Length: 220
Image (tube, rainbow, N blue to C red; front, side, top):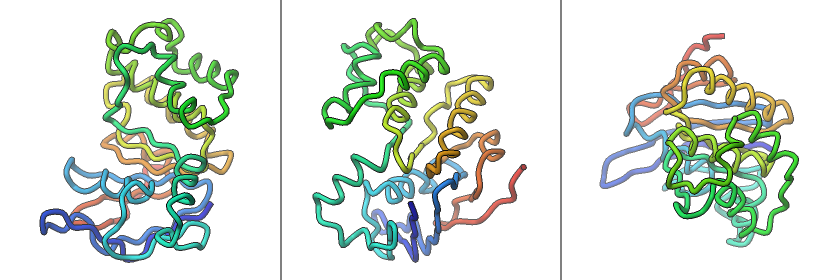
């Protein structure tokens, strides 16, 4: 998969949120955006993930202009090649963790690899909570649910927006190791975070301020 953004801009209420954004992302890349809340990280993630259309600039996927896609092509792209793990998880409170994890796959008629799900549940240590209603789960348990729901799908590109801010350091490191394994099968990962631990794993890291991207030196 190849994603290219050129001269991407986005304005909200006459305030520039993004301007002159350039990114070239290949399979196996892990891109991270840093900076304070409100800097435009989530807006950029939603544009990269095709959930939000840039107001100017060119976005191509595999050398085809995204904004020339038919609506059916765009829906297929989102369904089959992208997955989204956001900090604002919209789970159904009266459903169990298991039902919530599988719901989007069931509704989308996507195949569910139960062995892969069991592996992810074991790694992220939520087996004992799978049949509990989400209403009774902690924020950290919900964050791990969201990761499992995303990774069952084996997408080509994973969009991640600060999904584990409540997790302790050991569990965050477990998650990063798990995502490294995903990247090894040529998956693109694009993430926004405040966590300095993440930078150890990325191939490109940027600070996002003054509405544009600034490369930062890797900690590796």
